[in-house]
Image 1 (cartoon, rainbow, N blue to C red):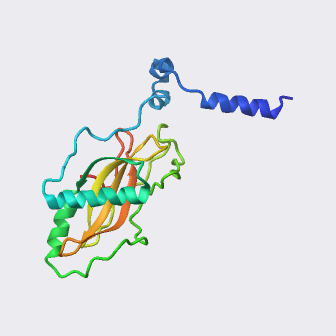
Image 2: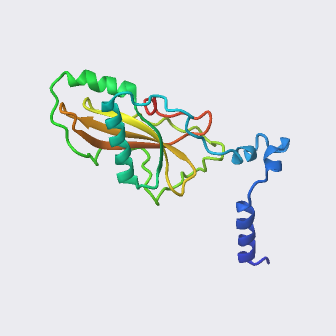
Image 3: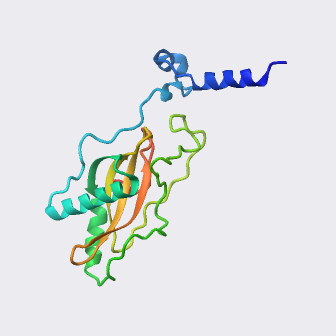
Length: 201
């Protein structure tokens, strides 16, 4: 009879051994998922798709960036923050009607789909590097109120190699006073993956 502890230890060591580049690139590895394991996680684009143009837009983007740092910690890396054009266009159309005064953070908003906490980022049940074993149901898009718009940024959290799409849901009153309502946070999908509609520009 084989002792259980050495057998379990051997299995753990084998399962955690890195896949060499030769194995990952070999023809036998193709179609087995081994070649996917060697791929780096998806990266943000090289340029900001919608850099802020006006002083008002820079103020909105700066406010959103500060909200990300205040909530998730100063060690996050943030790239290409920008207002999502369609959300701001809808916000401006809705401003023509009388809206109630802007309120502060709404922590009960169910629009947060995946919320990464600094130091508490939990990997998904299925490793992102593994091929999908079953179709993933589509995720709902952020549902904005008439007085809300979003600032999108690519965010890298400490201790997590994946980049995340982070949408900061904002509101502002007629005087320009800004308030964060919530976050909509989701990991960047692997190449060929999809996101809920409206998450990015």
